[in-house]
Image 1: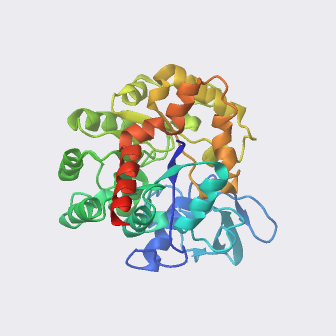
Image 2: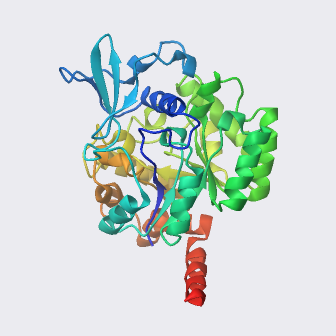
Image 3: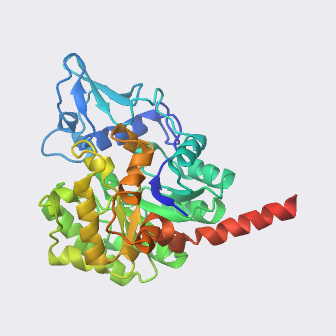
Length: 377
């Protein structure tokens, strides 16, 4: 069974998408674009400008977001205006005429690419997705396993602890998405391992839900910030022994892999080697704009990850439908499925689904779902 560890369904980006207001949703989306690897360009001449034009230098929080009339466009584009000039970020694929991804879109993509099951991740740029993720999972339990999220920097509050319990106990979501970039909303006024956060991590530890952590290099978005966050994360791993962690997006190539092989400092290696840590393999979404399919550079990095950590710690993900700005869904799996010939059949089976099946017990849930359906007929 091929399981995609990183996919999304979401309501129309042009609305509030579950947030209290459209303005909050737009702010989250603008923050995402500030450091995107997607093409960001000026409309009148196609000049590449990058996401740095969306925020004030020296302020990585929401307070630094520039007033640029940020808005949702068409054909996969996020639009904004600076000094009378319109700009576009090609964040989603060009073929996405309206930026929306219902569950049925993923089902069609999965059938075409030969993917059997998907883990639906979250993230505030996609919206407040707990209810929509639960809808997709409950409609298609054989096809989707969905994650929940809370307001990460306020996860310790009564409101967020109640939302965690609702999403887990009532909605039945099977894991947690937790992104460090969300701390920018509050000016990085707390760290994810500070004492007030113990209330949240204790609840997570008791739930035994896996945590998919996107360990952005906050607050400075540089290598030293990433190293500090790995030290903090490793500390959490030691304190909360029941929690299983998946490193969303995997190791950052820009810090440790530009030579073509991984060069990890000791503190990073220690965190990655922890028995309760798995690493996502997901290169086209970040490097597909620079590397050409079938991504031989990524293949060598996967080989090195296998050699350093073993196939049992690696999980393939695509980031659909976003990844189609650079390649097709089939290509996002085939560069591993067809071209990583150095992997044994058993290693491919583990990376392309087996490790996730163990993490979530997906096959057992599918059997239970089928049995329940049979009794109701």
